[in-house]
Image (cartoon, rainbow, N blue to C red):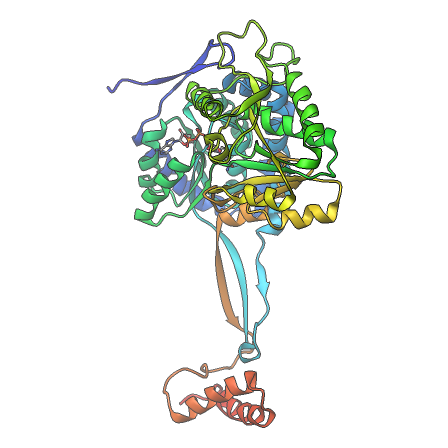
Length: 523
Ligand code: NAD
């Protein structure tokens, strides 16, 4: 008997062991995919309205157990319970509700009108067909909200799911399994496995899944896509960000500073769409920085014992070291920490770092070029909005961004110039919590979209069915046997449709009509 491996879960905010979860084998993954394939066929036959009933059961279970789920997320990932509740649990319930209610219409058959007079006899419709078994690999930073959204989208679309949650958040994986099982799904339609990342990549692709939804880092996304290309398995990749916020001179300074503190430091800065870089117009720089520094220094950082903390711990030591390295690089090249909130005393055993505001930052510092993914806000003064837009777009990543101004028209104009998958006006990051808005990035921030009607489209493939409107047509005009008459008739069709000269168009119509009459005769 091979030895059973266990993943030990540690609360990163206290260093305490909080449980263990059995590691799954590749054989178990293959068996889960095989079973899922069989069950999926029946699931896809069920009406979307009936599938939606299972999602409503999941929604209800989340609502009843919201506090307990938030507690598990907080203890496993290090974030505060309010972070967990507001950015993971409530959005998950709203997503279940949204996909259950809107999925029916979004996934319904779409009828197409003939696009051209020459094909007026053809009518078509598009059905959204599930892929089969969707493999989902998710990260530790939103260990509940990210995978459950994708599980819900996959299920309502008629797919089976095999899910792998990050090794670091296996306690969340356990409660996620409990939540999905509350949906009383057919046995084997949904499986959750604990497989270490480096093994999971090849194993998932080889396991027989029909589509991969991956959320995580850019390098792992690239590796998975390369592997998936061997079997041409379609992939949706939700990868990293290095998000900018643009603060215009007419911004509400209080809102823009308070929003930056939430967008940059909630989840301890470990948000793919969190604020990383801030570009502030010179005219208000000093006033803005005064509020930003004050707000940052007031943050209470520590283990969430009694809800009275604002920022929790980082989740992994690796991440903590990355953040330290980015800050060190910036300081060594001339950046200055102008505001800092230290972890409260008594938190020495947790993975805590101070929340910092960096000023005097230059474009070539690592923190400006790469995703820091920690409690760091790097701020630069810019002369005007054009400079801010250029700097925002000067990145190989393009997940989200935000514009802060009281002038709505200007805000939308700036938004139209930003190379990112989601732009918020006078807000940041929160659209991840909206099931109705697509989520995903430009450039190396990913491929494809999750959430919303586009997310449901990504969980399915379109199948078009084309039919004749008029019965009795024996053959299409271009079918065999070919002849000069057919050639002239086809020239007639294009002349009739597109020539500018009226008499040539009439000649064309006559030639086309003659050809059309042939359609009703057998040779
Ligand atoms: P990661 O890429 O290391 O891991 C993500 C998941 O992939 C985990 O489940 C991990 O176990 C697994 N994994 C790791 N190596 C693998 C491999 N070789 N093959 C298959 N699976 C593998 O990322 P992370 O550190 O867990 O998450 C942080 C990153 O995720 C950040 O870059 C962040 O921006 C990004 N992220 C993006 C989004 C988004 O929506 N765009 C959301 C959250 C996080």
